[in-house]
Length: 177
Image (tube, rainbow, N blue to C red; front, side):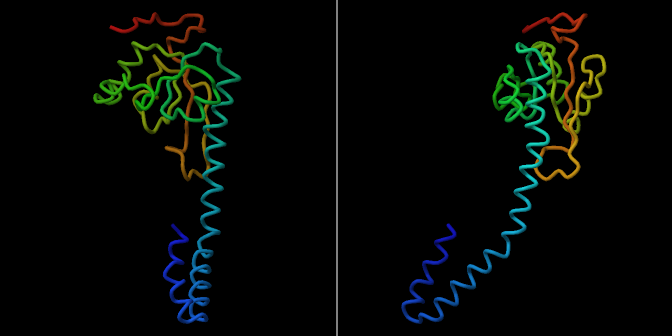
């Protein structure tokens, strides 16, 4: 796409070589003017993903049982690096949750009460009602970004669920129904 801007300049260069060169130089300088800001935005984006999703994926892999089932609202790096079964509350990789999502957080909770995950990893700002349900979800780990440029929220929290199969007293899972 950027190269296509030079195509009209080729015609100009044939007619007036000096003007063609000047126009190319100005176009090149204009594109370089935004390079520093773009590089900075890119660097912060990489830092944010590494500090939040990548570190949470590694935490999951190191601190949860291999057979654990996770519920996530950001499945990418966490699901990949965590190497656990995932349920996606947004519905991208778990389309069965979509009808429940139509009822907001109450619907998501109904789905979770049937799926009985072991861990819930969410942006509390996206799910304020779920994140405060101390009868179902206990926070055990959190990551907070000081300079968030790309993550869905500044903080992501790992909660152990009341159905966690590795708890001494897990709630019984009623399962689908």
